[in-house]
Length: 161
Image (cartoon, rainbow, N blue to C red; front, side, top):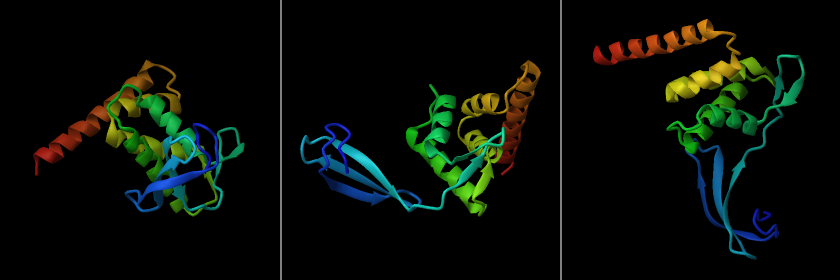
């Protein structure tokens, strides 16, 4: 593995452990040249998954692109990077579980919004405002009311237990 610091190609594994769901192995490495420590992730290579965009173009599914969207929506919110990575893992698992080799970008966006709604309402609204391209304040207001109603319903269920 090439060191991201000095770019030499000699490192050793210090620690290796599976992630929560067991599909990825996290490895701590140390460069034998400069001593820099870094983390790598090893996952099973799966068949390529193509995303069908709004305009009909196809591109390969990109975990980093999904993560960047989540990071932007959760900026300055109490959402940990581990939680964001888990959302991406969950979304990718759901998409791959469909069994299709091509999936609409809209489906990915819906999965992300569903996950974000359970994690942070503000991040959800931010993501939804970009994803759904809110045209005016009325659409934005209606989405906010929907979130508030879900919270109210959840509270009444929790209090009724």
